[in-house]
Length: 364
Image 1: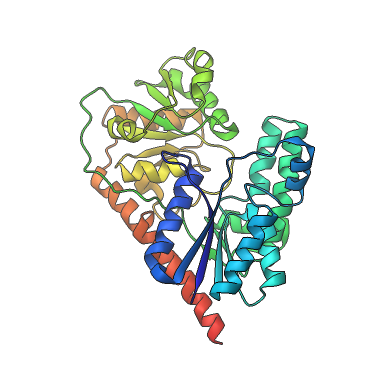
Image 2: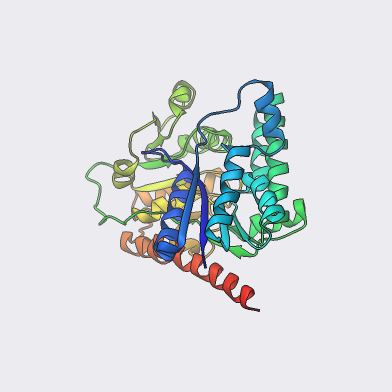
């Protein structure tokens, strides 16, 4: 079986959840297929400018995909006898459509990082604008094509699969939980007083959650919470007006913050996919205090990973119990959960199962 991997260039030092997962997916495929794998990477950094580029985005030319890249992809499929193309993201649905039209023997596997239409609908509600409407429509169309023209659809959790059914009339064929390409470091007991950690960029769902945390939870706490993530420094004045909130903002690396923290908070109420911060916390042996949305897709580890909270009082109580050592989590057991369910080895097992299914279907 010859595989073509279609993904996007990932800048060195990128720490976004989507980038980390795409990097891991790429690494897992490299490990599985070796010489039977070809790769085509697209540069997503140039953003659409001007009317013509924005109109092109509205018909599926998104995130670096253009007619030249599409043609190059089709040429590789023909020249190398590609049996399966793996596409990193449902925003490349136009490419899936082109492959089904011009290379019908090639099977299409698309990995859905989110239900993009749901994600951008949330962004539109949080900050309405003409641009936000355009982004939503462009991603809805591309995702619709991805659902229609992919042979295999991979989602992160069953919630996203059911949402695809509601929006586009088809569920996922495979569920691959979020995994990370990291090595669990030996946990060390922090020397400083206990504190909690929030990690994530200041996009709408994270900002909504942190504002709620600062307003409703922080005044009830017996320890501080550090907010680490790109863009949060712009909200330092607003958030630090509440007690027990310290805004760090953009950092070069989140590793030292995870190592020093006593626990991780995930006050997330909106979104799609799975939350990277939960898997990262487990990798570092830290328990997670989070909402139902934060733990979406992590059902396999349940309460062993931390505490699920529904309101501000239960959130604060769970945090204070950890700070007072009334509730103790074993760091090595948390890391064992990560290795079993959310590591590179776990991702390779998921991909092997998916491609074994494809091979069996082709043999029938």
